[in-house]
Length: 415
Ligand code: SF4
Image 1: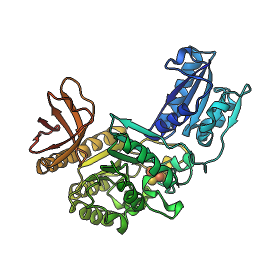
Image 2: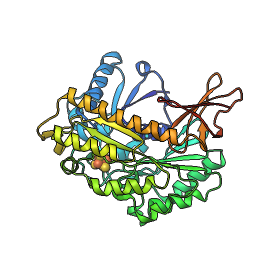
Image 3: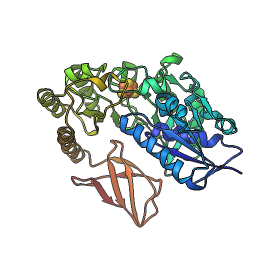
Image 4: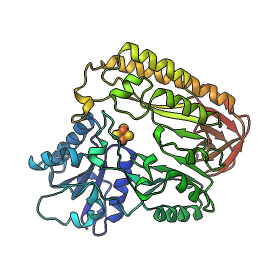
């Protein structure tokens, strides 16, 4: 049997997509060794110019190290760089997102191929990924309808489209009856789920919560404008994780406008205060060093970050992506300044998180992952990591903790 090796670049969505392809391989053997494989499928990322270079370098190195292998380009890079790599004969074949479920047939091509497909398709395979034995990530939608200036994603993943509700619920029922208790909903723009099927995230959540065994639900990320009254009403439900990740990307209105975002600081602040008053921890994404982020705007932004009830942050340093509006914007921010700003932002949120944990050190519901030598780790309902030491085997167990020890680096206890 011929061997196929998958190389995945980029985000969790790409990792899911690799799993879709792997699950569809029927006539080939899955290989763990790229150097002895007959095919190398590169599931590429194109989110920044740097990501493109990494993919290109990997392809060149494989051509040197395993010249007999057929290299197939898949993933987001197929839609941005596929044509040129194919024309330059750097790869044997190119497939777009819609073709990945046909991977078994595609590999049978004896002639070089360029099958880019379309960006309207949604896979019928819903992929779950498991952490330990009781947490599962479920991809519920694909694509994005926003047009943020710095982002190439809508061009390479297409418009937002949702998986079918019945399929999602069926999958969750199966997993719940196999002992999974926590579900994390993910996708390219998760909060847009349902719009194309005349339903909503809130309706899906309610239905999920009625499935026996579903104990806690998290949502990967939401956009502020996607939070409606129907969703707000669910905030006091016991099965909702008490942390939401809401992507703001910036807190200066000038920068939000430059980035073509749909949120504004005044409405973000009101929303965050409302959610925090219901006992929630709040995380966000923040892009540091986007062109135009001068000292004044940065100063405004940081004062506002201090004002917001934030407890977690994913801070990204801006990185240029050709063919986006931001790529030609001026003035650019020097790398060392962006680095310093990144540090400043993460230090502010770290201090806020510490203060939050000092106030929330009891009644913690933690789902532990598998441990080693009596040390287990898991997340509480606020998405804070807790380390638990125990002589008992607590792998994949839910534990209820009071008075955990809170330090600046994390929460800890012994049971
Ligand atoms: S919401 Fe904006 S940043 Fe996120 S995928 Fe869509 S366009 Fe990109």
